[in-house]
Image (cartoon, rainbow, N blue to C red; front, side):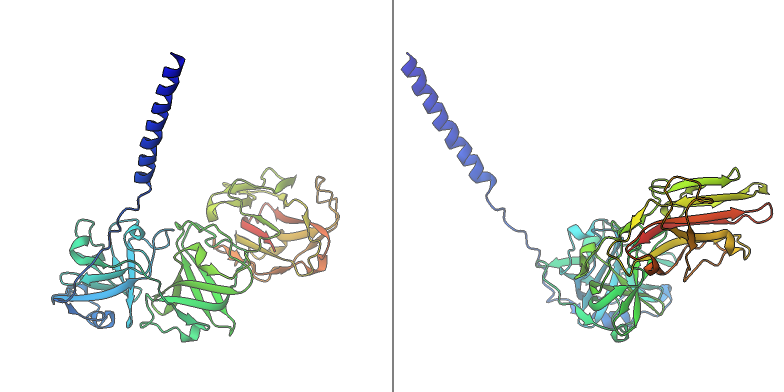
Length: 425
């Protein structure tokens, strides 16, 4: 009887193995690839440059009435949020932006995808002199709706690798003909290396410097996934799409990974005040007001001796933890800050450094403090955040230091001081 049961179990095991083996083979079969195709043989093809010549500057007159088609290769991607409801395509004569309502365009229009665009019924317009293609919405250009995209756009084949045009100087980039083209910038660095890509809640312009001293702007949306990443040090290569705003040339980054050959060396110290005062500690010497935080610049430290409707005498310090500069002879600090109502009393707004502070005592009586020189400081009359530029710490090489922001006010002068970020590199 036991032998019969044993034989039954062996049969079940064999059957199960055969069944599972069949399932595994079925699961790992490679599905057929759906390759889109389009036959343009009956179309009247024109180049992107020829299409752009139809733009007159008056949207009422810029309806495309001829049955023409353009062919281009996708050069933009909205995968990381730097492009939004826009598809940039290029051919050998230049590039153009197409406004499209759908989101996550990268899922269907990947970089390198060939696209045919039937232009009849669409309109041309320009944003900051950058010519765009879309549909007319009264007196402005709008996105082609999701339901009508298939009426105008046709994919052909699978995405292929694009060979970018290489530039080693901003002087070789031409407004107009290079608009919406895919490029490779070599021998470049960021002027504000070590700071956030987008330091505030608004879109950001970061200067890219070439080895010959020429510059262009990298324009970045505050909604992109890499907005709060840190701009890398050193010199490297950047891939992206050339756009412009009137006469200002701009580079739009598709992906954070398009920064190539940079070291991405992390700063020795960074605080962005995105979660309160972070690692800084406040020390109140005088007055009822103290260092606190605000939402400006996507989070900042804030100090003001003004409490409506009066100004009050104060002395308040915001002090970093100890920062070790061992092995560093060329360390610099960058402060992103805004100051208003200073009324010329910059001695009330001081950035200090100490090598002998004990980390806990009253800084007004303990430790030897030296005021640091700020290369670029705010105007003192607006809320605009300004990058300080490189504040040299070379005099404190190989030492352990504390950085402090010392604020003072009186019953007649009480500025507001906002610090968006502090970086030591």
